[in-house]
Length: 282
Ligand SMILES: [Zn+2]
Image (cartoon, rainbow, N blue to C red; front, top):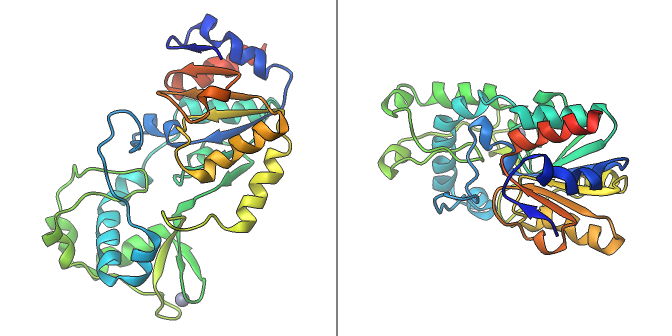
């Protein structure tokens, strides 16, 4: 395995060799979005944090209030995030026929925003919410307006600059959360959940099938910005190994696939992916 901390031409050579003339499928993780201002809580320097579990969200009204109070505060900044050079480079690599598509663990919609056409959002998207009772899907922006209008001047008491996590919520003191009221589904009065996969929840089967269809086109699996700590992403590594599909990795820090990688480059995606796209353009 080739590993180098320097994202210069020499360090990129093994990865270029791997990708040139082959169809690649990208497995993208939080590292793709850190340069867009969305922190990777599993990455280097991240503070330990406990995201809400699916069962807690479904069973506990207080748990939902805590989730939505944090989310109401974090949403404006999260939804204002723009794609970075790495996202745009992936879209360019798709245009040039090298990348067949992106299987992403991110819920920020930034691959679409950068122009990537074929994207499987494994963990869903924070841009929409879904009713757990009737299944109705609505936009998160609209739900944000309902959250804020139902909670009056609550939002004004919550200062800016709260810590933000990749799933779009923010850390708030309990006293701030207790007063928070959560709107119900406008059609049936059911519980509204962000349309993302929580910890303790499975990726929907049809979405996994979409991902496998895309994966089947891969002659190379390119891991971009994921340490592969969760199974929903790691399963593609296992399949690649079974089928003899070589694995390339771009990431800051170690990943679970390092021992089986054909090439690895350490460094920020927003710097390395554009270099890769440029080199493969020629
Ligand atoms: Zn409903």
